[in-house]
Image (cartoon, rainbow, N blue to C red; front, top):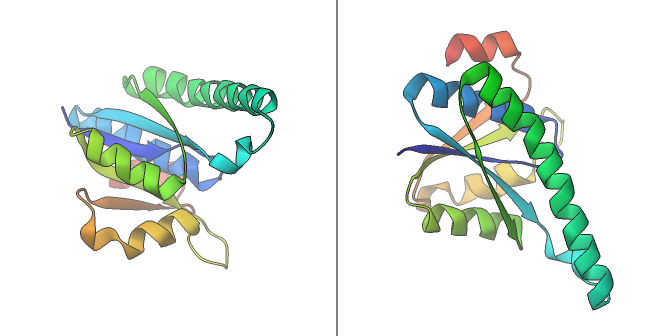
Length: 151
């Protein structure tokens, strides 16, 4: 079955990417896969401290995911799947796409900052010609109503 993969992070544009993925999945009968990546620099400490930090990061991700998951289930009848990986974010996104053959579309939110759309959109756009799936970039400035009108 087709999946929309969306990246869960602490950015504000993540919200629009989640909304878009949930609405498109509902309208097309697809699934949503939420990918969270824990960067390696979070654990460059003593072994015991690193393990505790890794566990805390996973707990934060699960709590953040549950907020989106509850909303997707209640509003869009979509039951998202959470995947947590550790490593460099772009490499982990690409690996997840390669490893999960059901991922058909990568959904990213673009920031509204004057500096540009954000590092993730910038980095993945540069390699988009070599990706195995299309990227949908959702503008962070779109309102919920505007998203509903285009989905």
